[in-house]
Length: 296
Image (cartoon, rainbow, N blue to C red; front, side):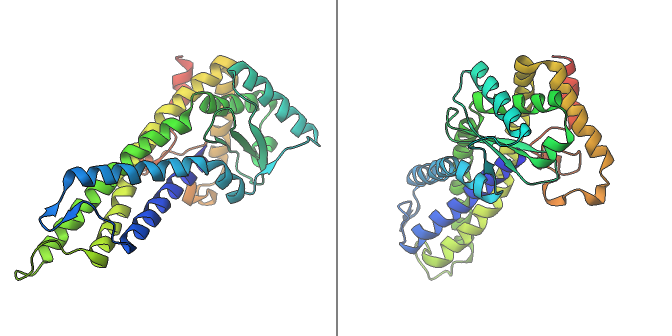
């Protein structure tokens, strides 16, 4: 799951920067006038760019995931594990009344899984080799049920809409902040707005800063939907299996020395850790997820 969120956010931010840079080269700024900012035009401009970036990220999410993590799509199962994996996901897809997703395995010692794709009937579900090697069938069923719940709930589309709104305000306030900075450093003998390369460069800096802060909103929503996906898994494969999967992840986490955990992804993997970076985490602490399921 964490890989999907990381890829989506990184791709979205990169697309926003690229689009903004290209538009700046052509000096396309309908919101800039000789009298200052046209806020209505700026909001429309920000909305178009913001949602364009979010939906482009959504449509290429599956392709990005496959190539970024070298996911090997299972066309024809060759091993017992692949046959079992395909059978379980097919059964869950039928229960969820969604199309059979592409199924893949990627090489990683960490126990992880993720689902992505712009359409719940044309999704991708990928699991790590570490997950297959460390969990038994019941625990794996819990994880697969969780990922298929994300697909069936249309979480990627919902995330895209939220990201589009967030992008809109990021671009809007970045341009306003850049305008205020330019006005502050404007010489008294100058008139109107200082546009051009300097203004757009300052706006891009604010866009990056605000984009990082805005990711807090996206991560909050991601943590919320993790609880919902846990409940979805409990409904379709059994609460005990999902709880066993979370306990297993907790056990593996406790056995792994802290200095051996991948620090770059600590706050975003399926076996998320509690830390001071919790606000940037895409997953709630495992203990809270277990408690929520026990009370479900």
